[in-house]
Length: 182
Ligand SMILES: [Mg+2]
Ligand SMILES: [Zn+2]
Image (tube, rainbow, N blue to C red; front, side, top):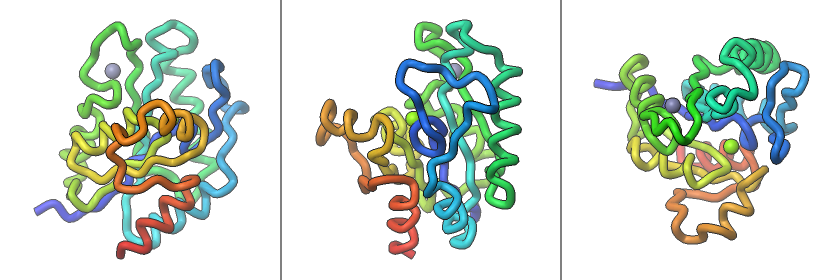
């Protein structure tokens, strides 16, 4: 029986700032949302394993390398300290490669579910795009859309097509929502 419950966090625009049109390449460009550490603390306290699942098509497009991305993630984990993610996974492919791991495709999530024996029905996906919510629903988790970064524009663009369990202002709002359910 799977016993682990998890939150799968999108990285850019959900956990850390995203600058439109700019690909994040270097550790010094990583800026956590102010409310993120408090949110992660709540997830930990509620007993959730934290995973980061990210599309990094900049690798496939040739803007930066997987090695640079790994350095960014090592730095991000250091910044998160005791609230660090259990694992950070990412899709390195360009959309044109039609891979099985770019969100909303579920491969990255499925791999984590297997590896950590996750109870997906008790788990959440949090992100700022419809593709994050679609990814969550396809996995069998509940999706929470945050209004940070692309969030509001995605709501304008897709409206009710976004099948989120909840829309919140930011990651801390998502944590408060999950806390309220327990
Ligand atoms: Mg995002
Ligand atoms: Zn991929």
